[in-house]
Length: 81
Figure 1 (cartoon, helix red, strand yellow):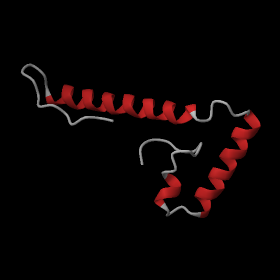
Figure 2: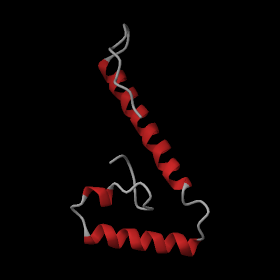
Figure 3: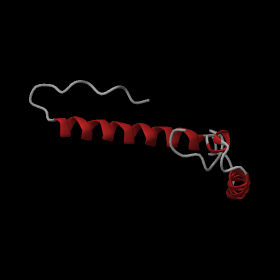
Figure 4: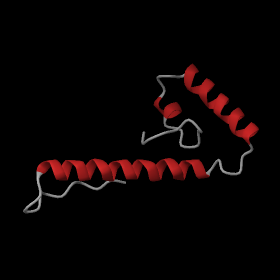
């Protein structure tokens, strides 16, 4: 989880602070992505494909339901809800 950005320190620019915050957020998102993927590590290719197809169908049938898109167990889940 990203923390609130700190105030600029002497000698750093706002651009440096923004770029640092963006990089921190990117790393947080990668860690989250890898963490979610671990729950699928023991699935065969066939099982993973079946779960992916089912998750995609569910999302396609309910595109406006936030919970469908935010389902943390879905192989389609990416990023933070």
